[in-house]
Amino acid sequence: MGFKCGIVGLPNVGKSTLFNALTATAAAEAANYPFCTIEPNVGRVAVPDDRLEKLAAIAGSKQIIPTQLEFVDIAGLVRGASKGEGLGNQFLAHIREVDAIAHVLRCFEDGDITHVEGSVDPIRDAEVIETELMLADMESLEKRLPAIEKKAKAGDKDAAEQGGVIAPVLAALQAGKPARICHFSKPEEQKIFRMLQLLTGKPIVYICNVGEGDAANGNAFTQKVADYAAAQNANYAIISASIESEIAQLESEEEKRAFLSDLGLPETGLTKAIKEGYKALNLITFYTIGPKEARAWTVEKPAKAPQAAGVIHTDFERGFICAETIKYDDYIACNGESKAKETGKLRLEGKEYFVNDGDVFHFRFNV
Picture (cartoon, rainbow, N blue to C red):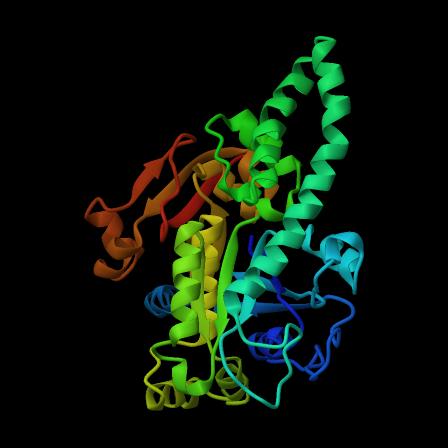
């Protein structure tokens, strides 16, 4: 299981340039005019994972299969999108299909690249899109609520539960707050909230697109975004789309590492985006390791062992017996499964075991 992240933003903030760099393709046309991306372009990328490489080296795995991340480059949005302005209807429809939002904000000055709002102001840009998404969510809930309230008054228990979730969310939206600020403790309420498919209910990562000189430490614009994200309990990352474009053209990992080192960057923007996306979506990675292949898998926490098994194959979950489990650090320290077993680091975990990030599993099942 990977996850689908929609790249959104106003026109000409660097969305398509970033998409092309991240996926190392030229599928999305990056041009200096609005709406150059008409249909959503989708690209899958491997999630960089140093742990997987180390596990594979110890096990002598012939093949390494990282987990996948899917990026969707969505057409640029303008003011009035919630009312159908520009490509608003397409934008809103496509964003409903993604798991998280990567909101690209222009944090660089460049007189040769026009800005649809006339000046560079990432907070204003963020609020433009957030407002359009909130208006669309409000309209959606206001249409649903009367019928639900009517059913609830007639004694429909399910409708009453739905109304109990919709009411506070709608109140937040009407107060100018995104739906994601609403927190529900009961699992059934959380399920109802997810089923509402609200645009502002999706986790968000703010991507600050900066010039090459600001990639390492950011600038005044990125600091404003950092403060804005903190106030929303959201994540952010600083990326230079132009640097990512150059890295994408390099063939070997050695060349990429040397290029990053020269710029004083510890990792690529792709790695930053994935890490922040994982945090936003509450995802963790587990592994299956053997001589044929070393493979990384993704699951949303909290997840129990049978759910992790189900990510690999539904039969594994249906016939789950137990999971042979080794912590990543123990696998490395023991230099593999054999010594981990000898030293008691391999454990048999049952159906109630909660998966930890980095767990190495071998599932026993019977169908």
